[in-house]
Length: 452
Ligand SMILES: Cc1cc2nc3c(=O)[nH]c(=O)nc-3n(C[C@H](O)[C@H](O)[C@H](O)COP(=O)(O)OP(=O)(O)OC[C@H]3O[C@@H](n4cnc5c(N)ncnc54)[C@H](O)[C@@H]3O)c2cc1C
Image (cartoon, rainbow, N blue to C red; front, side, top):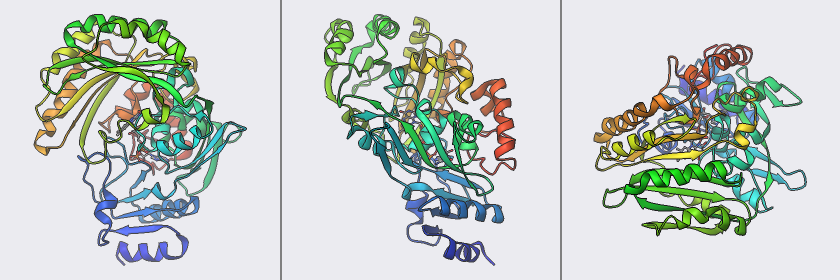
């Protein structure tokens, strides 16, 4: 019997959601993921409506020995949420957020997007610190860490993950929390794609005024070292409410530019005080810091980062940001391939992120003061090699300044010892024990894989 017929039989009675096969009209749309470079052909795509369907799908995949790709928002940059010839368990019908304003807790279904959580939480003047593009999946982002503009105040997204419902490799539903399977919760907080499928996640929320101060100021690159010094100073001396980024890119005329971005989540008066020096640096070539709704900042780059572009990135954690690093990166701006948009960005970490002990979660790199990324986006397939090479060469040039640990959610290469470089040797061994306990057959291996 062909896999199509066995699929039909297995999913007819025990499955309430959708099943999409290669012969179906919606197959091509359903197999697409965010990164336009990824083009894979799964044997089938299933869209569960709840944990019961997810359990059915896992058991079916195991019987059929099909590789399993798990998809929430589909934004995995290397394309872990799809596969050739396997099953995609696509949680996009599992979307929904319930906020308990009294307890300041949100219950979030496994296929929800960041925008769903932001929208519901802000209706109650609450927030969970998440990433900066609202169409990213909440589960995928959370299970790797979750960095964003509120992290210095409220920590990473995982630091606010209280519990999760997880379908395990043997098709059972278990809870991971402080009260049940705390070892699993530890692993979910940074290596979570390895242990099961999170069908529901529970987050702690924090009060946040709906209006914050946000923006960026752009300056010509000839004052880049002065601007970097100001940025370092603001990161070191500013309050936890002040999150800053430093960036290098090219303007519309392809001339190099430097910028500082900021989100201040304190009062508008405090923000004016804390941003005064950056404003006084001189009239910017473009940009400003303004009071605006928090929700508008969370969607402002959605269109620029829409589905379908080709994309590559490479990142590192830095203990500091010496001029030498800035100068080396500036030099790489002149090699940016024509036809591609590329930039370097340096996000301020520390504070609430660093306040959590390094061994409290699987996530590695809490002592980093900065996260540095080279990101490049283009549409012409002929540029693939040159674009990837641009990001790789730039990061290789500053690697001597980096510390151990990498942010798992933006590591684009896979296999071999890659996961070990993400977590470091000590944590990798602990993760390995956990993997042996929860997924000894490596059913969940389309991820930065911990080999059991
Ligand atoms: C445009 C864009 C913006 C980004 N911005 C940020 C940012 O601001 N901050 C930040 O920290 N990161 C950011 N990222 C990185 C992002 O966190 C990762 O790409 C993340 O893995 C995406 O999650 P997803 O659910 O959308 O992706 P998917 O491709 O659906 O999944 C990603 C990985 O998580 C696994 N997974 C997904 N859902 C589940 C689940 N329910 N249970 C178990 N495993 C699951 C998948 O198997 C896969 O390995 C961004 C990425 C993109 C493309």
